Image 1 (cartoon, one colour):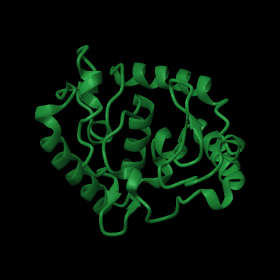
Image 2 (image 1 turned 30 degrees about the vertical axis):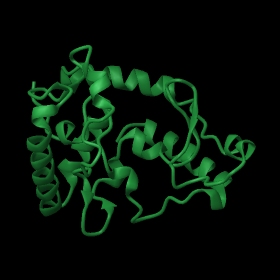
Image 3 (image 1 turned 45 degrees about the horizontal axis):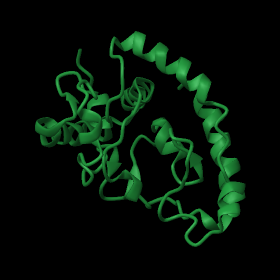
Amino acid sequence: MNDLFPILDAALASAAERSGKWLACMSGCHQCCMGVFAISQLDAEQLREGLAIADPAVAQRILTRAADSRTRLHGEFPGDPSTGLLFTEPEHEEAFADFANDELCPVLDPDTGTCDLYAFRPTQCRTFGPPIRDAEDHLTVCELCFVDAPADEVSRCEMDQDWRSQEDALISDAERRSGLFGATIIAFGLTPSK
């Protein structure tokens, strides 16, 4: 597991402590596991690492769910479905906004509502819930959290993101190792092809 995850987990713990009752996230709450989202090649690498050491029966269930997901998503995939890379054409980014919003994450155990690779989950999964800045520098939160919270309370609980530059360097390294340059989704990242 990479050195970034302990830093992320500490930043999350700090934000969660400050968030207190405003943070609704708990085991079994998996609304954020519905719909696909872009992950980095670093995230994909970490998921594969977790898959490699998972109980074989659990790993097989994950791989089956991922294969089923890839089959469902193949025709409308906003990228190259042979590599799993997103956004290979200019129109793909716009198409992604409405893509597979009802697709369950293949790493989610549908019976328990928990993540089968929780310790190896992607950065976005580790940072979702508490207030965090998005790419446009807007403060965002899970729609189930901070309901009716005043803006200053949301700001007070913002998650520290000093780890972003370290993540960028690690993503570049993971891309070089995989030979895949760009984002993917979990279903494709679990079993990449070149």
